[in-house]
Image (cartoon, rainbow, N blue to C red; front, side, top):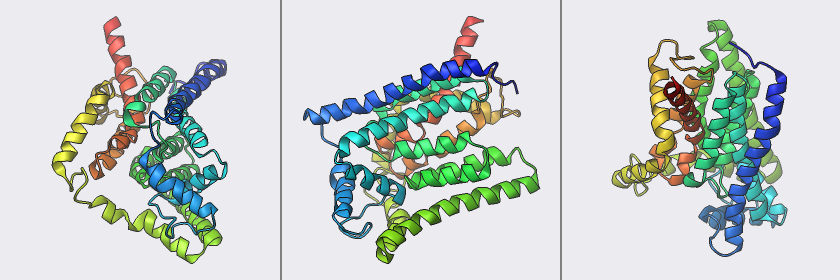
Length: 347
């Protein structure tokens, strides 16, 4: 595979792309913050009803994951939530952090492609993602931006320990990150022989389990057995009730509302879905799946698998915000599609 022509080109690109993505990501969330400060909008319902009250209760001396400090988000997000509340500027700090997380997603899309000599594809993918974030509700205080940044960080590294640890950290922000694990594992295992693959998978699994174990052990050490039990239940045990709720718009719940919600929200993202679907179909149907009949070195097959797997939360609940999960992967595939379109148009 051809590598980047020069380190200087990458450096010069970095000095422009990284600040531009950071500026755009933060401006998007700060626009929301300023509207809240002006009284035109309210903080997201989860902030008002769950996250901020939980953080304030813990800071007042209540144990986490024990009523009244109860929420169904995993410990890393709750620890961040408490740390942000401790600053005394809860909304401001959180909106800045979400803006940085969204920017990090765009930067990682670019870097993943730039490492494969597809810098332009990555740059357009990052821009497509950031411009689509408001339509998916990604400018509010949310867990998804942090989890997706963790998924892409995991994709950007190759060592099994690093990949396992980072995807575990992503899952400790949002449980939905686990849907990315099979694609992230397959991305490396398909390039290894049987013995090397077993060793890689073992290291990947042990690293991920280790991060999860250390995090829950921290909850036990700081807040005790009741909080540890609560952390286990609310992170994992509550999943059954969450996924089988009959009144929410889901595949096994209110199916009619689910289909209507999917249709309504999908219309907002057609600029990504249509070209992404075409490229994914080419990637998954060709024999040389790493490079189908497309002039790019971007990781098309892995991205297609991640886009597909990260639509799983939409089957659980067809919420607008859940579109944020597949959005970066759709953006990367769409970027490839637009590149091919303009290439054909020039010919």
